[in-house]
Length: 79
Image (cartoon, rainbow, N blue to C red; front, top):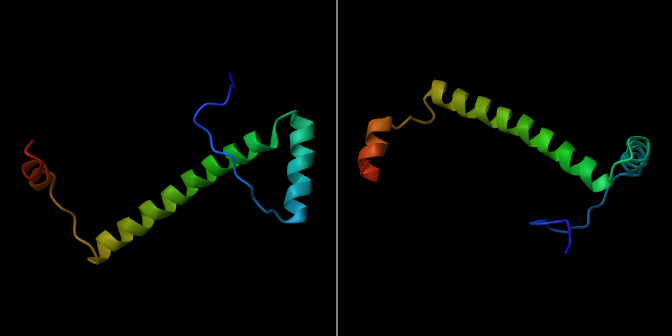
């Protein structure tokens, strides 16, 4: 049985310089390239989440969007 559970294989295209750096880091750290890419993406997703949070807060503060009071949401959900 494979040690990989709940994974998807994919093919990506990288700039040659990025690939060279990835190869060097993987070799020096004795890590799989896929592991380094996955970790890098998780960190990048955290950065994007923060950017989206800031964007949504600006939209809320500017009045572009309105917040729905929690009580209204709970009522609609029957909670």
